[in-house]
Image (cartoon, rainbow, N blue to C red; front, side):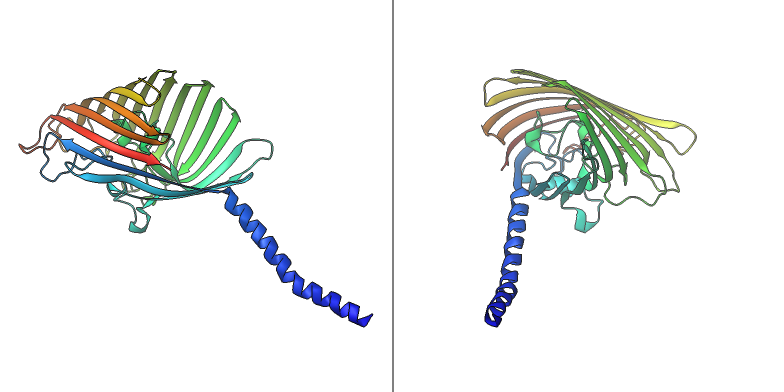
Length: 361
């Protein structure tokens, strides 16, 4: 009898670690199954007919901004986890886009594309609270090339936030409507400027049926120190209609910001895109755009009328495989003031050609 008890105790003591290890292995396996890894690479060559002496494209462009060299626009690695009540993402990046767009951020954060965690707040409702660094709710163009119709980004996309930091509440009551409310550290900032004025944002995305979307996004707050206290109010609107062969998109920005006196400065932007699928793997796209920031709220040019420009582009793409595209684009700008660099000094017109190979895997 005593021997049997001793054997039972020995089995329990020696078997417990094995059981715990088995449970941990099962948990680790379950966790690993929920993590999805991905990567994206976008390599380009851009040729600017103005031949800028420093090989830098116009200062208000952050994508494909190097002249006459093969370069990495954006390369990133990403991990996503999605569970019933938890979601998170971490994406690290490198390239000329990251170098140009995050130059004012703390050095250790300049290679972070996204780092967020979210929890579901309601059992029966699709209500999520996310916090960290996340993609902007403003505009219809992403930093990820394969998500966009045109190769280069519009002026309004380049001069509104690509990323934000803070917290956001997302409610999706139906498959057709989504509401987002945000508390942010600033206008495309990871670390906020020293002020006591919070920044807020909203988004309403309406999808009445497949292929049609309406969007309204806003920003309210101050992105300047308390010593200036310049309050900003911004609205972005866009509409997308994608059919089997034809696609149409339009967008508009309207913003105002207090000046140092008692008035308000304003800026506006607009774009229109038309895309035609020639086959399952080939398409062409045309874009017209307009931007006017006469008070130089967003883009400082140092010229009498600020950045006022019309732009046109024509592009073609070949889908090598799902998520991998080869693209070419010709683009031209005509400015009110000489805001473009050339070998002959500042000029009012600018034309460039860009080729890109991009893949997500």
